[in-house]
Image (tube, rainbow, N blue to C red):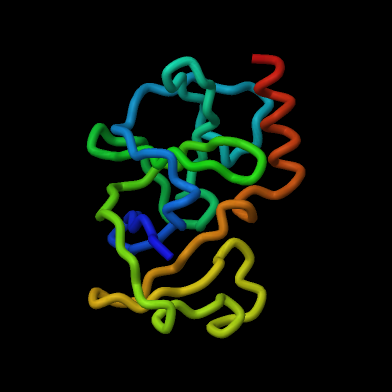
Length: 148
C-alpha cells in the first residue's frame, strides 16, 4: 500500500495514496455559511468547489491561520472531494505490509485512524478518510454546498 506522508506540527501522518488526487499550495478560501466548524471554507479548484477541512481542529492540535507555506491535500472520500490543510507533504512511501498495523492492534476505538505504519523515521498514523467527517457533518457540508 502506498502512502502519502504529510505533517502537522512536526507530527507525521499518512493517507492511502489511492485516496489522494493531488497536493497544491495553500490558496485563499471563501467562507461557507452554515458549514460545520471543522470546515475552514471552500476552494475553487479548476471549477470544482472543494470544502477545506481544518485537521488541526479535528485532531485537537493548536490552531493557527493558514500560512503561505502550507499545502492542501486534495483527497476523495467515498462520497466527496475534500482539501485537507497540512503544514507540508513529505512524499510517497510504500512500507512492507508487515510494517503496517491495523488501528485495533495498537489502540481500540481509534476512530478515524486506519492503522499505523513503521517507517525508518518512526511511526506514522494512517488516517481513514471516510471516517474523518461525522455523518452529520457530511450532510451539513452537502447542504451548505447546495446553497453556495
